Amino acid sequence: MSQLVPKPSDTAASRVRTAVLISGTGSNMVALLEAAQAADYPADIQLVISNRPNAKGLAKAEALGVTAICVNHRSFETRAGFEDVLDATLREHDIDFVVCAGFMRVLTSEFVGKWSQKLINIHPSLLPKYKGLHTHQRALEAKDTEHGCTVHWVSEGVDEGEVIAQSSLHIHAEDTADSLAKRVQVLEHGLYPDALRIAVTGR
Image (spheres, rainbow, N blue to C red):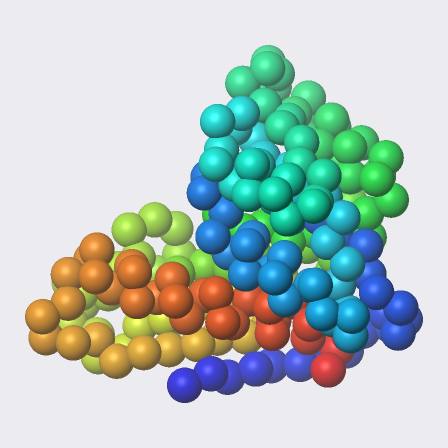
Protein backbone atom coordinates (compact mmCIF):
# COMPACT_ATOMS: atom_id res chain seq x y z
CA MET A 1 0.00 0.00 0.00
CA SER A 2 1.36 3.41 -0.95
CA GLN A 3 0.29 6.86 0.15
CA LEU A 4 1.49 9.79 -1.92
CA VAL A 5 1.25 13.27 -0.46
CA PRO A 6 1.67 16.04 -3.07
CA LYS A 7 3.45 19.27 -2.16
CA PRO A 8 2.98 22.48 -4.13
CA SER A 9 5.94 23.49 -6.29
CA ASP A 10 6.86 26.28 -8.69
CA THR A 11 9.23 23.99 -10.59
CA ALA A 12 9.10 24.51 -14.33
CA ALA A 13 8.11 21.77 -16.72
CA SER A 14 11.74 21.27 -17.88
CA ARG A 15 13.77 18.51 -16.24
CA VAL A 16 15.35 19.52 -12.96
CA ARG A 17 19.13 19.08 -12.66
CA THR A 18 19.48 16.68 -9.74
CA ALA A 19 22.27 15.15 -7.65
CA VAL A 20 22.17 12.01 -5.52
CA LEU A 21 24.19 11.74 -2.30
CA ILE A 22 25.25 8.23 -1.25
CA SER A 23 27.54 6.48 1.21
CA GLY A 24 27.36 2.82 0.19
CA THR A 25 26.10 0.45 -2.48
CA GLY A 26 23.64 2.90 -3.98
CA SER A 27 20.69 0.56 -4.55
CA ASN A 28 18.17 3.41 -4.26
CA MET A 29 20.41 5.53 -6.45
CA VAL A 30 20.24 2.88 -9.18
CA ALA A 31 16.44 2.82 -8.96
CA LEU A 32 16.41 6.60 -9.37
CA LEU A 33 18.88 6.57 -12.27
CA GLU A 34 16.88 3.91 -14.09
CA ALA A 35 13.67 5.92 -13.66
CA ALA A 36 15.44 9.08 -14.86
CA GLN A 37 16.36 7.42 -18.16
CA ALA A 38 12.76 7.98 -19.29
CA ALA A 39 12.52 11.14 -21.39
CA ASP A 40 9.41 12.30 -19.56
CA TYR A 41 10.86 11.86 -16.06
CA PRO A 42 11.08 15.35 -14.48
CA ALA A 43 14.44 14.92 -12.70
CA ASP A 44 17.63 14.81 -14.76
CA ILE A 45 20.24 13.15 -12.52
CA GLN A 46 23.54 14.76 -13.49
CA LEU A 47 25.74 13.92 -10.51
CA VAL A 48 26.34 11.34 -7.78
CA ILE A 49 28.47 12.25 -4.75
CA SER A 50 29.69 9.90 -2.03
CA ASN A 51 31.33 10.88 1.23
CA ARG A 52 33.18 7.54 1.20
CA PRO A 53 35.79 6.75 -1.47
CA ASN A 54 35.09 2.99 -1.34
CA ALA A 55 31.33 3.35 -1.90
CA LYS A 56 30.31 0.76 -4.50
CA GLY A 57 27.61 3.11 -5.76
CA LEU A 58 30.24 5.34 -7.40
CA ALA A 59 31.16 2.65 -9.95
CA LYS A 60 27.47 1.87 -10.53
CA ALA A 61 26.76 5.52 -11.30
CA GLU A 62 29.65 5.72 -13.76
CA ALA A 63 28.46 2.52 -15.44
CA LEU A 64 25.11 4.22 -15.99
CA GLY A 65 26.80 7.25 -17.54
CA VAL A 66 26.52 9.65 -14.61
CA THR A 67 29.38 11.74 -13.21
CA ALA A 68 30.45 10.26 -9.86
CA ILE A 69 32.58 12.16 -7.35
CA CYS A 70 33.88 11.47 -3.85
CA VAL A 71 33.99 14.28 -1.29
CA ASN A 72 35.59 12.35 1.55
CA HIS A 73 34.33 13.71 4.86
CA ARG A 74 37.45 12.36 6.57
CA SER A 75 39.57 14.82 4.61
CA PHE A 76 38.12 17.74 6.57
CA GLU A 77 38.74 18.78 10.14
CA THR A 78 35.23 20.13 10.59
CA ARG A 79 31.74 19.26 9.44
CA ALA A 80 31.41 22.80 8.10
CA GLY A 81 34.51 22.35 5.94
CA PHE A 82 33.11 19.18 4.42
CA GLU A 83 29.73 20.75 3.76
CA ASP A 84 31.30 23.85 2.19
CA VAL A 85 33.01 21.68 -0.42
CA LEU A 86 29.90 19.54 -0.86
CA ASP A 87 27.82 22.65 -1.49
CA ALA A 88 30.44 24.11 -3.86
CA THR A 89 30.58 20.84 -5.83
CA LEU A 90 26.82 20.81 -6.25
CA ARG A 91 26.81 24.40 -7.47
CA GLU A 92 29.75 23.85 -9.83
CA HIS A 93 27.58 21.27 -11.58
CA ASP A 94 24.55 23.59 -11.65
CA ILE A 95 22.51 21.29 -9.45
CA ASP A 96 19.03 22.48 -8.51
CA PHE A 97 17.77 19.54 -6.41
CA VAL A 98 19.48 17.07 -4.06
CA VAL A 99 18.41 13.54 -3.13
CA CYS A 100 19.88 11.66 -0.16
CA ALA A 101 19.91 7.91 -0.88
CA GLY A 102 21.70 6.04 1.88
CA PHE A 103 23.79 9.11 2.70
CA MET A 104 25.05 8.42 6.21
CA ARG A 105 25.87 11.95 7.31
CA VAL A 106 23.69 14.23 9.41
CA LEU A 107 23.58 17.57 7.60
CA THR A 108 23.85 20.79 9.58
CA SER A 109 21.15 23.43 9.72
CA GLU A 110 23.39 25.72 7.64
CA PHE A 111 23.55 23.24 4.74
CA VAL A 112 19.86 22.36 5.02
CA GLY A 113 19.01 26.05 4.95
CA LYS A 114 20.94 26.56 1.71
CA TRP A 115 18.97 23.75 0.07
CA SER A 116 15.59 24.32 1.71
CA GLN A 117 12.75 22.68 -0.25
CA LYS A 118 15.36 21.26 -2.64
CA LEU A 119 16.59 18.39 -0.47
CA ILE A 120 14.86 15.06 0.22
CA ASN A 121 15.68 11.81 2.00
CA ILE A 122 14.33 8.27 2.29
CA HIS A 123 14.01 6.62 5.71
CA PRO A 124 13.23 2.94 6.48
CA SER A 125 10.21 3.42 8.72
CA LEU A 126 6.74 4.88 8.62
CA LEU A 127 7.64 8.26 10.04
CA PRO A 128 7.06 9.73 12.55
CA LYS A 129 7.75 6.26 13.98
CA TYR A 130 11.35 5.18 14.53
CA LYS A 131 13.51 8.11 13.57
CA GLY A 132 17.20 7.29 13.48
CA LEU A 133 18.78 3.83 13.36
CA HIS A 134 17.73 0.17 13.83
CA THR A 135 14.21 0.85 12.59
CA HIS A 136 13.38 -2.74 11.63
CA GLN A 137 14.36 -4.21 14.99
CA ARG A 138 12.45 -1.46 16.79
CA ALA A 139 9.32 -2.20 14.76
CA LEU A 140 9.57 -5.89 15.66
CA GLU A 141 10.16 -5.18 19.34
CA ALA A 142 7.10 -2.93 19.39
CA LYS A 143 5.07 -5.79 17.84
CA ASP A 144 3.91 -3.56 15.01
CA THR A 145 1.76 -5.14 12.34
CA GLU A 146 2.87 -2.70 9.62
CA HIS A 147 6.22 -1.26 8.64
CA GLY A 148 7.60 0.52 5.63
CA CYS A 149 9.51 3.53 4.35
CA THR A 150 9.07 7.27 4.02
CA VAL A 151 10.39 9.93 1.67
CA HIS A 152 10.48 13.32 3.35
CA TRP A 153 11.80 16.83 2.95
CA VAL A 154 15.05 17.27 4.89
CA SER A 155 14.72 19.70 7.79
CA GLU A 156 17.02 20.69 10.65
CA GLY A 157 15.74 17.84 12.84
CA VAL A 158 16.83 14.30 11.94
CA ASP A 159 14.01 12.51 10.08
CA GLU A 160 11.57 15.24 11.07
CA GLY A 161 10.81 16.87 7.71
CA GLU A 162 7.37 16.90 6.08
CA VAL A 163 6.34 13.59 4.51
CA ILE A 164 6.21 13.43 0.71
CA ALA A 165 5.32 9.74 0.27
CA GLN A 166 5.11 6.48 2.19
CA SER A 167 4.85 2.81 1.33
CA SER A 168 3.95 0.04 3.80
CA LEU A 169 3.90 -3.72 4.15
CA HIS A 170 2.51 -6.24 6.63
CA ILE A 171 4.97 -7.65 9.16
CA HIS A 172 4.99 -11.46 9.09
CA ALA A 173 5.23 -13.53 12.27
CA GLU A 174 8.47 -15.08 10.99
CA ASP A 175 10.12 -11.76 10.07
CA THR A 176 13.53 -10.89 11.46
CA ALA A 177 15.22 -7.50 11.30
CA ASP A 178 17.22 -8.74 8.28
CA SER A 179 14.25 -10.13 6.38
CA LEU A 180 12.23 -7.01 7.11
CA ALA A 181 15.09 -4.82 5.89
CA LYS A 182 15.21 -6.70 2.57
CA ARG A 183 11.45 -6.44 2.09
CA VAL A 184 11.39 -2.74 2.94
CA GLN A 185 14.25 -2.09 0.54
CA VAL A 186 12.10 -3.43 -2.29
CA LEU A 187 9.44 -0.90 -1.29
CA GLU A 188 12.06 1.87 -1.28
CA HIS A 189 13.11 1.11 -4.85
CA GLY A 190 9.53 1.52 -6.01
CA LEU A 191 8.66 4.51 -3.86
CA TYR A 192 11.65 6.81 -4.30
CA PRO A 193 11.30 7.48 -8.05
CA ASP A 194 7.61 8.32 -7.56
CA ALA A 195 8.38 10.54 -4.58
CA LEU A 196 11.12 12.41 -6.45
CA ARG A 197 8.66 13.05 -9.27
CA ILE A 198 6.21 14.54 -6.75
CA ALA A 199 8.91 16.60 -5.05
CA VAL A 200 10.16 18.31 -8.21
CA THR A 201 6.76 18.79 -9.87
CA GLY A 202 4.28 19.11 -7.01
CA ARG A 203 2.07 16.50 -8.74
